[in-house]
Image (cartoon, rainbow, N blue to C red; front, top):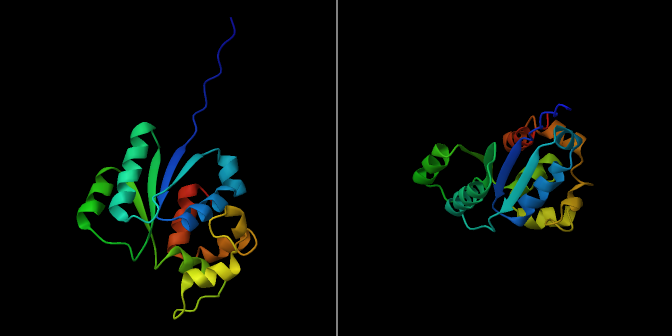
Length: 166
């Protein structure tokens, strides 16, 4: 009788974002060769800008349907702060990653196009035609550039680290 090969288990990761552009950028990072080679099953959920409490609710609801090795939230730092919500996330082992101001600012600083006084979404829109399509990020935010910038952008470094990009 033939012996069975042990079944390989994949690492699973759930990331919940505030908006469509964050989800699209994460899908761009998900295409990174290191992520694909690691074989991590990544689920990206979009909470459609409904605030930190709703993000945690979405993460808990999604995680209740399937077991994930790791759950993370990607939030803008300007998101409503609630200590009770942070404690709830901590008790559920949910990692919260704060972009310093917002994801758009992090990305604009990555390519040195950041102007504090102007609307960052509009600035990013000039560079990334469709911020909700992950393929739009390829030209302005290639992986080698992101690897350099992650040394200076804590939020980008955390996101890339959670995804397993070394």
